[in-house]
Image (cartoon, rainbow, N blue to C red; front, side, top):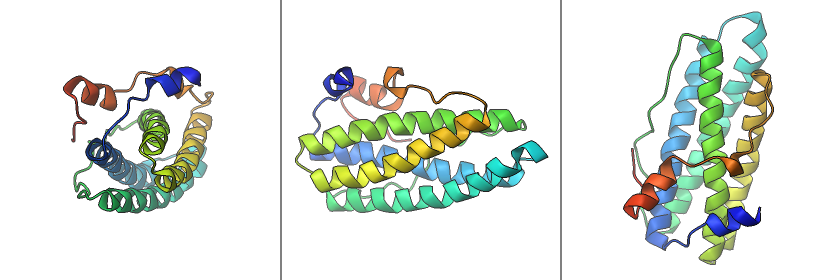
Length: 173
């Protein structure tokens, strides 16, 4: 945990808007993926998780609304573009794509909490913590459906914010 705190680089309010817009694009991606996957997963072994994915879609929509409100509060404009959704004919691959996305989302929101607190935006950090709790539940649901332990995302390298750090800003897709 101490290493995680060291890895969070301070950001400006403008950079936080960019990072939150990236998070928002990932929420849009999750909404689309959960809607599609919940309807195309077939087979008795996937009925329970398909129903759970429908619930996840609604929760992700709520997250998108909250993140949009935070972006507006900071004076930014919420993005209208989703990150690309991966698709597959294979149920296990769909669930793997979702788990990978949730892992990235959890890791990023943990960093957002630290960044918000560093800016003195404690209420904003609390909103993100609430989202983070649900994202971690999604992570558990997906790992369980795949018969795996929940990955330790603190040991994973981030794709998106590392690219953003290399450029000095977050990239929007």
